[in-house]
Length: 411
Image (cartoon, rainbow, N blue to C red; front, side, top):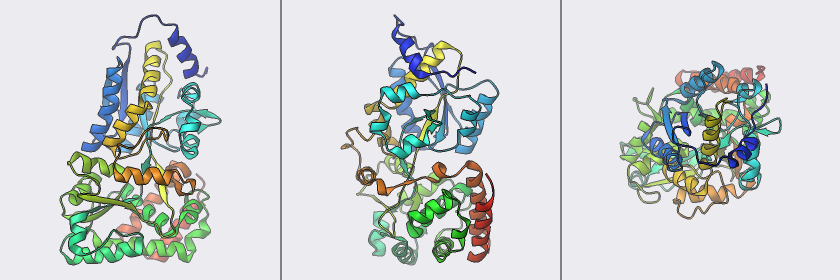
């Protein structure tokens, strides 16, 4: 099957005398951004695309897994959308292997992606030397968000590591406030575990587990200390946590009903949507026992191969608009993430984003997200084991053995 190149398409567009109309530039976009902050952020993309003469057709599907499954099924079934969202990582590998995605090499060269984006992000969208998705942001996945008034009343400063956090949670608990806002769903149970793994276990253990799949590491004292800390966090969540949505947990912190939440920086979009300001009503930090550990992920949009020339033009226009400096800043202000382009003027972003931008200037702080290191099947297997550990009386030793078994599987 002939590969569609956006470079050739861009050349063809130059020869077009009249601009395409809105109907010609119709773009159906499948994504999972449905919370208040997320909806405000994706509207930036829609507004910018429509402003450029396009016609954004929004197809929001709640839940990342649900949206990805719908987009993949439609693409495989011959009825693809114009663009579809994935996390930065390996989630679209099967589509690439089956030659169902357009490559973006021409656009990546034209916009000099390699000189304006972190190398790990470029690698995460490249397969066999070709680029197959547009990175649109960078999310830190292991942030701690806290209500400043709650911490002040409890008499605790911003914690720097997990030992200080446990001490802070005890003091918050004594005030009668929910210490740790939590959404008891499998992916967020894994997210909390991952924050402990990288923050207490360190980057070497993180890469060894998720990147090298070294099963022997699961039996080390360092890993068991991570597991024990994670299990202890159950003492600080409320009875309503099971099944709760992540943004509802964030709302507990916003309202002062809970002290802290561990969540990616998409949570900041909820604080922004509620009219709160970083450093005033809420604070943010990344817990690290070893001085490094900003887990860097994000979102990308992939573009199925389409036969219609107008649809191909809409894909190219959309991809370009998502990476324009003005779009990048406006989107980051709503989403809570930081721009994937490191060459934009980020001075208008809040203090949490400024912290992240500072960390990103140091490559040693850039820890690839689990989605960049592990295939989806391993992520799912680990998620199952972590959820069993969180929700049952499973011991640390039993958990260690189950993690080792998962890492020994061939994915």
